[in-house]
Image (cartoon, rainbow, N blue to C red; front, side):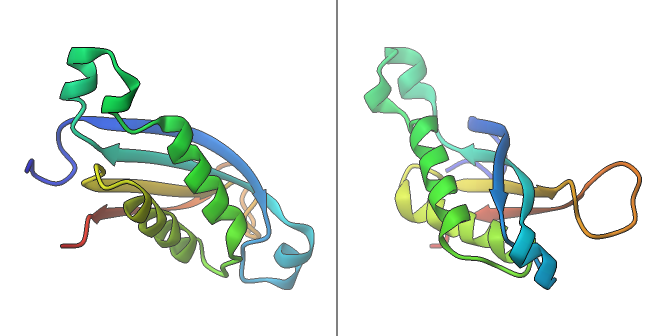
Length: 127
């Protein structure tokens, strides 16, 4: 096995969702945009060599798991949301060795003129 967070990876960036996650009651009522970036550590040597979809993890399937997890359970903290996504991806795809998930909240309820609040979790598949 390779060292965590090195080697081949599947990358999905700027996955946009509208949801009701957050600590404040306004966030639960009105909702807001969220952006999710993912890196999934997967050995891509077989699909690179064979050019066959059956030899890799489909990024469309990864997206479906992220979407279902995002929409499935409201969380107060984006840290918990990011952990739920990592846990769901490990459960769904045995080939994923590690995950970096970043959850970005462009309209976080803080006084900022520009930018976003975000968290990034680095997780290795539990043994």
